[in-house]
Image (cartoon, rainbow, N blue to C red):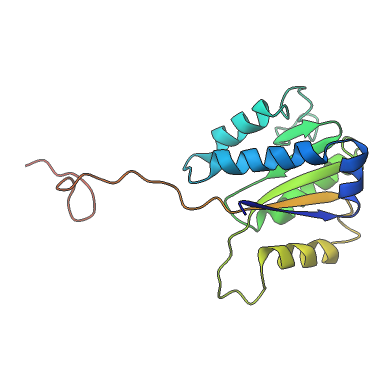
Length: 173
């Protein structure tokens, strides 16, 4: 499965009340399909969220006078995330909590990479996310949906045989 969706603190009830359960699921699956195997994920993520209607209303700002913005926003639900490292969970939850405390959002969606080392003693990403979100309460109390993505490895073009030196750099003769 390219994306695993986990709900915490009544986030599912909020999505159901807003009639957004299927739209959120479709959005996350579309993001997974769009980003799978890609190298430059930032512009593709913005494009995918824009196409799904999460970047239309201009209310992405988290703090006035600052450049902090949610990745997407729709009907009181904010999307935040990073695919670089699972550890973004803390910063992402903090950003969503700011929006929640300021009354900007009712719930948040946090997108994270789901890949972890098989040697990790901390368990799967889903188990770790559940444990961390529980441990961060009451400091972090925002209702949140965590989406764990398997985006594969970037598809890098193969260099043509005979080009480049030992370290891959071409040296003129």
